[in-house]
Image (cartoon, rainbow, N blue to C red):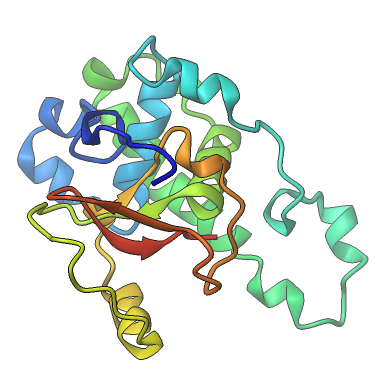
Length: 196
């Protein structure tokens, strides 16, 4: 074992305060990774348990999502442009995040702080550093299947409640699918490789 991390410091939709502050019907109206990204945005914009963690995370990314229109124009004619996902992310921000934050300013604070740039940055952190965890707990690390088909099925079924930002563990060098690092914790985190 390299290190041990208490479940209480994992940044998830259940450890962040946002879900408990919103009406259940409002929370359940959010889909995809938006609940986790919104939770991260709110924790980032306030002094919280994760303030020191956020201070260590990158604020700029080289991923295509963050390229300017002029830079992306250089890739015109390639298949890469259809895989960037910027349009879908911008649509989620404009149609879901902005109105949701505005409607619940009593919980979020100043809606102007919840910018598209911050939404994309938090989304990029999830994509580049999150782990798959078992939100229900109680999973032993007895079963250590390397069955790729099973892993693929679980990825397809992934629930946002099973995605966590894990302070310190995300510094480990990992590549999705290579299983060079595995996260295990009794009754807390199921054995899954890093999400990269």
